[in-house]
Image 1 (cartoon, rainbow, N blue to C red):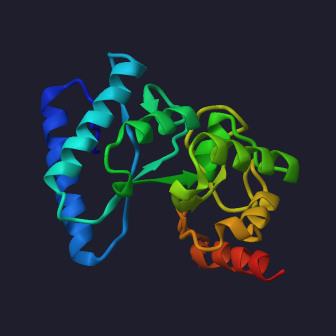
Image 2 (cartoon, rainbow, N blue to C red):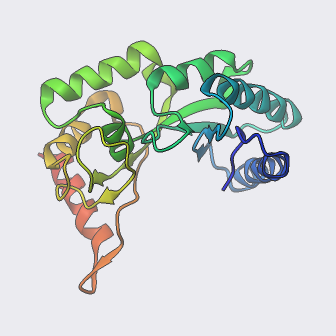
Length: 214
């Protein structure tokens, strides 16, 4: 897995090379945003990790200046030394990027819930979206991963569940699908794929379409 915050030189070098290849592939395929976890600082510090991510992305964007694909930093659950579980961390990374046209954010519902951002009821949902907008800015939100959570709120554990069957619950996804601010944001599922021979992507998508029309 790509980790541009890694203090291990061999992992870091391979991560940079792989990320550049992915950006080039996105350009060939006409993909606007490449979603990635920001990185894990391992045995260094949060501050060192964030600075390394910023410096690396600035260098990569310079090397791929002729390309247009953005890096969409994904919100993370906060496991271990993974960065990106606080909106403030992502905001700091974005602030350090010189070419703002090459950076964006992907919000994962399971991850933000695990990290302590509640979206289960309307009041909590609005509070979290407002926090995101105030700290990062909704203009940077270019993709969403819609996943329920197998783990309870704030546990910092990344365990995806079918929509409406986890601790987040169905209401949150109704709020998202009926939020006009998010109308043009691509939304993707990362839920388990099959159960008892049933294609669960179809089941989860049907729920989202129902919420969008209701």
